[in-house]
Image 1: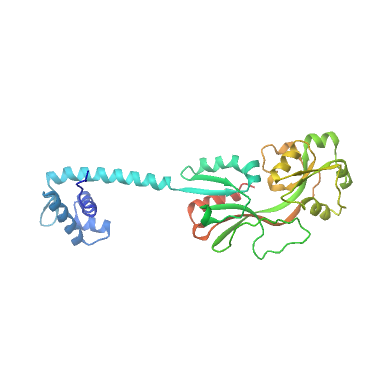
Image 2 (image 1 turned 90 degrees about the vertical axis):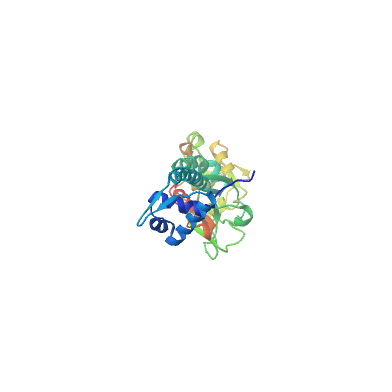
Amino acid sequence: MKRRLPPLLALRAFEAAGRHLSFSKAADELNVTQGAISRQIKLLEDFLHAPLFRRLTRQVELTPFGQSYLAAAISALDEIERATVQSLQEARSLSVSVLPTIGVLWLMQRLTTFMMTYPEIRLQVSSSLEPVNFKREGVDVALRVGKLPGATFDPNAPQIDFRMTDTWDDVSVTPLWEDRITPVMSRRLFERHGPLTSLDDLGRFRLIHNQKRPDCWAAWLHAAGAAPTQGAGRVDVGHSFMAVMAARDGEGVACVPTIEIDNVDWRDELVKPFELSVRSAGGYYLLCPRDKALTSEVKLFSGWLVGQC
């Protein structure tokens, strides 16, 4: 069914003039001329085939029909405004891509705090180690670990070979945390077979290796001044969070990033048998398209994320 609706500009002009009982004040509110208001109201009166105002010498008055029509216009525009505001609020969404290990071990649980603090922002969370492609994936921000272009590090440091993004063109970067690695083991295993008073004591334990970061043990032992060792055996896992969980379960000693263990809820189940932590050749960064870096959603999430460690 075809709707019989008045011109929207004319309706807005009438509603403003009716509220103020002034064409000039309506013109100021809508940032147009007084003549434009007058023409729009005349257009609406012609459409309705009825006068809306009595035009007196220095003022205007609503006709009885104008009063009833003004009430209907205000009600309709108020309803449209409420629906528009609600739609804009619901449109405040943020698509976030996070690292699997950090997401699994502690970040996903903490995101509830962010959502409760900023309920107007709807989070869409995914996890990936792959280089982010913002245009193809439609992601707003991505938490990644790696090296920034042109950054130099100690060649003996634990290497991070992950590519963070397909292209650095128009990508904004917020530094988050250093990547530091250290050995970790379960408290039960430490209390049963520890303590470890020297690096030679590592030879009594199986060493847990993360295939995604294969040089962690070699780099840490080199920094500690120790010779390479295979320990009492070797356990190979495919991801860093699997190394952490294997250490928690008492399978051996893992060499993992401290960021992955210092923030878990069950941190007291783990022990760092040595004080030495070694900085890796890279760090953790929040990436986003440059044109989104200053949006309120990205700034709020970035600030919240920095404060989590």
